[in-house]
Length: 117
Length: 112
Image (tube, each protein chain N blue to C red):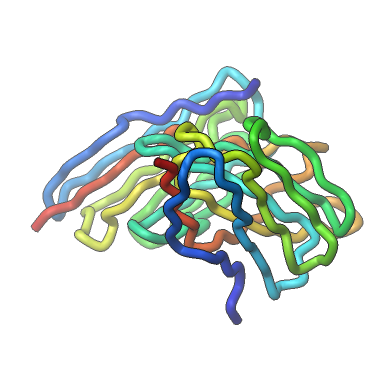
């Protein structure tokens, strides 16, 4: 099983450019998340989705957009890249059943390392 | 905003030593997870604790959830070089779309 796959692995952007970070999962998970991890810091939630067609903001959404047209894919878009968006971006997924549950694990991709110069 | 503080931030020890990492918050969580992250990879789940006072063991790793569900600890016995990595605690709250609040991380290096 591939799990959560992120592309590209590395990217350098110029200020003002735009790009889309791709994320796809093959585990039929309904929940998906985007995080950023800055050096020496934990992960901060950018956006999340509880199912196809439903997205919501996390802790640090400014400068980003997402869409969830299918269960498998959850791309993250940067419209006008800024140096403050230099970071490592992680996509994750988890499954929550109808009855709800506590402490479901999140499965992470290997990240996209993005530098904006 | 819920915050999770981890201590220590960095830890460098020799093989065979014991260590404890702490994860503290002023907020109550319904669950607490511990992840380990290696360079160039995403975090991988080690354990989930959901009951106040719960203790779980994973080989040489012992995890405890505080009675009030505001804090947790990770104890490693006889550390090995393979334990090297970034350890992250993450708190979950009910009714939040399974969102997690991640701690600041503890970077552990175990040398021979």
